[in-house]
Image (tube, rainbow, N blue to C red; front, side, top):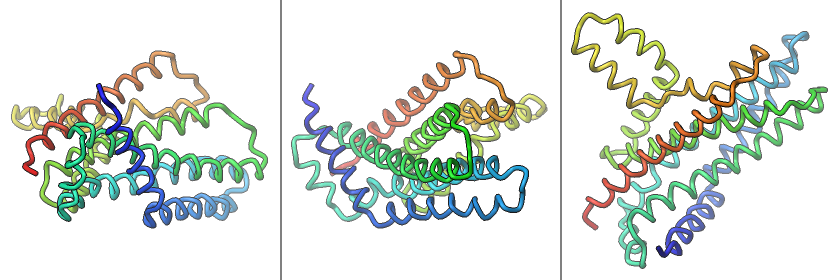
Length: 257
């Protein structure tokens, strides 16, 4: 299998995002948000480091979420609207390679941005006297996995819908639902209406289940998650991303260019 086309798309996408002003502005804004945690922490003298830690990690994830939704939804739609997709597909490249390459290039760029914000965040923590804990890297990795999952979903929805606004709205909605899958499951079990029960079941299965990524829950409870937790999070992440990318490639192959 010739993967030269795939690597070319990844390289092109990565360079495109790094040069993108929106991407750079969002990364800068993330640094400012993390820095603002210092100001907020002054309101809680007994929990300064803890607040900087929690606000910083939440800020990194939030900024990455906003970035991945905006960039990924427009990743293919813009090239389809400007007809530049014809020029790209005129090269010896398979359509699945184009979809996979665009996704991987975007995720790599986002992960680099998250790492840059994490370095700034760690510097702030060390200045405040924080003692290094390996749990930070695990928590950051869990956030990166969530961003990778929602990025694949955003790409799929961008090919399902007719506008970037609707794709962004659906993606944000599913991101929110992904943090309440337990509540959705409870509502489905308690519902007496079979139609409502079925719809709730469909929604909880389609939406990503982010309860598998909540490493910070163990961290705050001073507990070590079992090895099975890490294994299941990895399997779930890869399966969800793989399914979304397969569906995206199938939808893209049905487009007439």
